[in-house]
Length: 325
Image 1 (cartoon, rainbow, N blue to C red):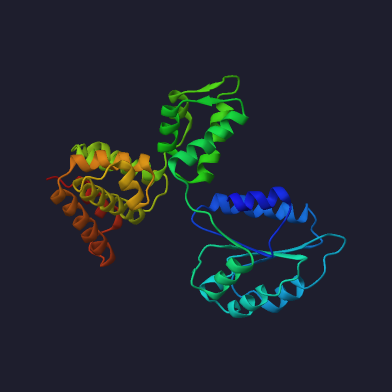
Image 2: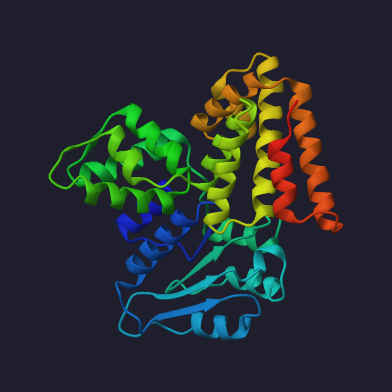
């Protein structure tokens, strides 16, 4: 991101950029910032393409056209599939080597194979930016910066509470920050009470709470959380998937804890946020390894029974939640 920021600041652009990675918010943000910086808001020298099946000859024909009363022409393309070897990838790879200096190509992709010829061409002649999920410290600094620009302060403890509710999706964090800023109008400090009252707990957080309730034999509470998720229109099979994923993560964390790894080491190994690992570590301590494995097996069995028509999806999850040891 440092290179992207520098190019935008200096107004010196490479012939091609590839924006990819898991963090959709950053891809959208840098796509818009690059577009504005390259074109200055001019639409006459801007072309946009989206989806697979884009005509390469049309793209290269426009890219070869000199900009009209401007320094650069921009061609922006999203989800072309070319970085996974789709039709047209070879032709575009060859074209990257001879892009006119007056043209800038921007690719925004969901799927990228770093071994592909096009990826290597953009890396050689332009810049490939992987916009991955940010870790908790980066998210905290970013969120605190937004709050500061709006005249708000927040303690580290309250920020951790905030992120535990929002998760690590920057789009969601941005939306929740807007709600907090509006709610605290006229006040400087954001409190725990503000966060608890205003911020929406994400589905994955409810799954955390559900697993904790299961561990504490609080079947009624676990069922209530399940009903909440159904009210939010979450499909039972997605809930089952999230429960299974959670127990798999608990198992992985418990095994790594057994090897002596601390929170930061586990977070790095499993590519999870440290504050998420901290919560999973607490859950891992409440289950034996055999209990975790039993729940993993129950999740697999429940999925199989639904797929074979022996149980309805909603009932299958209810039976899983109600299981007692």
